[in-house]
Length: 507
Ligand code: NAP
Image (cartoon, rainbow, N blue to C red; front, top):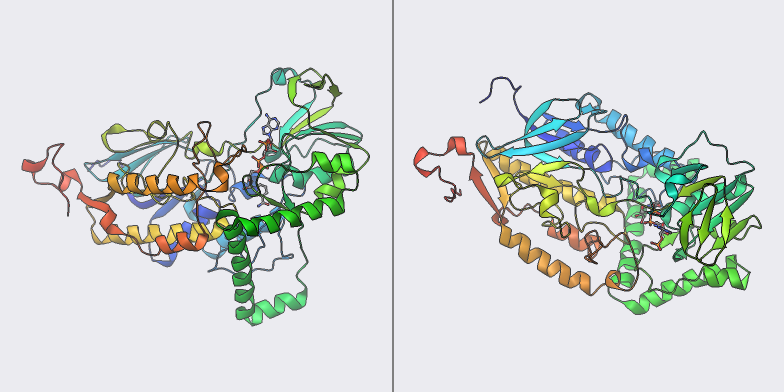
């Protein structure tokens, strides 16, 4: 053992969003205290720290968009705003005394697995090397803003920013503002921009399906009831969970049910947008669910305002102070805001993770990311991912998925604690079989249909979504299935006569 290094930690977690915080809490509760969270930014919260655009919030109700083991929180509303979700995350950090184990402004550059010691060595932007038995990636799927590749963009002289990097110092009052995108983020900030700016030019490539949001404030009485009779809060959580799983069934299995949801979306549009031409432009023509359907009640009234121009012609060029579209129009602008989403298929990039035989994970994933249960990858021992490939949902709370994954990883960690010199390596045939079936199922889903979405990579492979219900995933991750892994001894613990590359010593 190298004496320059401090003793290895049990777990290093990369990222301090919901996933990293939840993992740390479960470690703490299991008595595993030698862990550290490495966070690239200057604060915790992940996507809820980054996305501060006006109107940012979650379209999943908070009683379900929160951890089941930490339900008692004074949510002001059913659907929470970004500031309240971030406050919840900060409350978790405080309550579970995580602060001293979070290192901020510390980006993980690289991690290498050493078979001799069965340890990960993590290199950080601060220049240290941290060793741990287990490496957990909790970096999320939506953390790197995607900017459109439009000719001339760099020549634009006005203000430009992405929804996830909102410039709060820029005053929109009296400005001509262009907005690119009409996805989940854009429809939340558009009403504020419309209220402040002089003119808004909204560049829409594909209209979304939007269900009305039935939000309401929690009263003092609600909060008292939830706090005093936790069963009421639990019932609310289960009711929300059940209805969202029903949406999942509509999208995934029972298309006649999807037809009903589609009619509700179209009726919502019809009621809120009275101008037939505008309504035509806002009517989606792809199957419901192919792109994420949205829940919101403010976008349609905003887009109907007289200071908004909805442009559906394609953008061809950006000039010094305008955007040109393929119908020959030039739209003069002072500012351009990108609601263009995230580089969601990059997963762990730009981190470089080196597993057995020096394989680098981004290189292994060149044709598209894949993993077993979205958690483990063969030849990357003792490495586990939260919200990894094919674990995004189109219909339910990602927190539910995270809890399933954390529970499963805790099972793996318990196994490793019982075998202090060993490491767990997923059997490659298990990963192959799992992904063959997964892709077959995905092929039958609405996501493989004719629409663009961040669920697919440029080759059309669906790398982000889980093809079933959250309940199915919960059942698959209920127990850590050790039989699907090889538990191997660190090379330094092997008798020298079997230290040979092609000899596997499996316990
Ligand atoms: P998004 O859903 O990927 O939407 C990006 C938008 O930008 C789309 O309308 C897209 O058009 C458009 N776009 C991208 N590149 C373009 C280009 N070159 N020219 C013209 N238009 C372009 O991104 P997002 O809205 O940031 O949402 C990402 C995900 O974050 C969501 O799906 C959701 O999972 C999560 N989110 C959740 C909430 C919530 O309430 N829970 C809120 C915000 C975000 P096309 O559709 O034609 O590609």
